[in-house]
Length: 123
Image 1 (cartoon, one colour):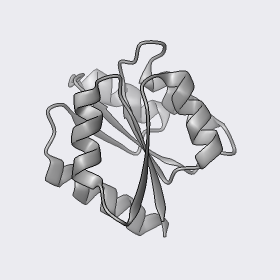
Image 2 (tube, helix red, strand yellow):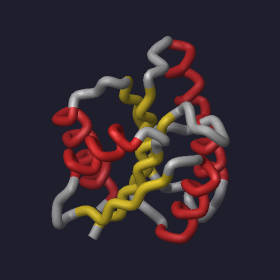
Image 3 (spheres, helix red, strand yellow):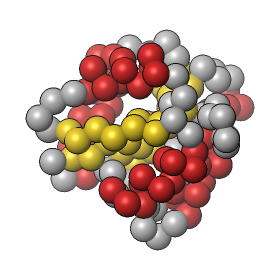
């Protein structure tokens, strides 16, 4: 089973992502803030982290950078899910090592296709 970590402080977003991706193929775990996300990522080694940029305790960019610089989680795919849609925001995420970037509101179908491509490449 493939593990997927959803990190967003908004229950509605986590719920939408969970409903979009929920299947027997994925074990979905959730975090509402950055410190919790780092802890869960280190304990569960998800294949993919869907990460909000604006979290209550940290920047998702900093969390992405931390995940990518830690040998235990460096190979984890990170896709940003954010309302920040400026090209500078995208560039900052790419510089931090993000593997993808979706702006809210996002297409659930496009997200599902991206997740399937990422897991297809990591199996």
